[in-house]
Length: 147
Image (cartoon, rainbow, N blue to C red; front, side, top):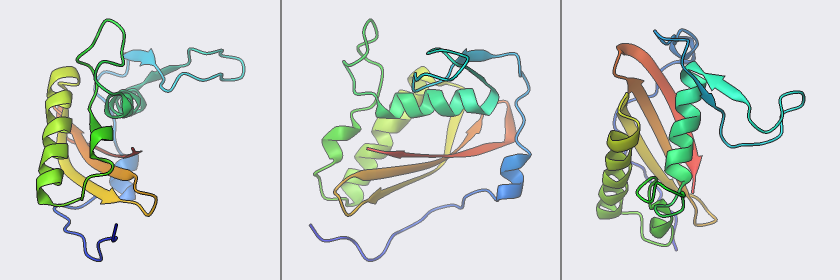
């Protein structure tokens, strides 16, 4: 499969300075940090809050296949089915729709500002997102996931 030589990019990533200034209005929100791993002194279930909590939840949502999660068979995105597909406008729109539906259902506080999809040399898919939170226009963050 040939690697595309040009990429269409819509929008722009926020600067590093604006990323450092990100603050959530409710810092009391705490949840599990994903992926679950052993943290020295904290065990398997590390806690996360703020933007880190939203990022880990979003990453978990994008990497989970529908039907994979017990008691939530609708949770996740079926992005693995696009790995061997040609990355054209139709496939990009299907990926965008898949991600948009899942985020609107399970992470209602997150808005997608920019979505980029790249094909890697090893036929993986890199999804890069710039997202904002509903509570503020200034709360933007980047996230990248490899499928």
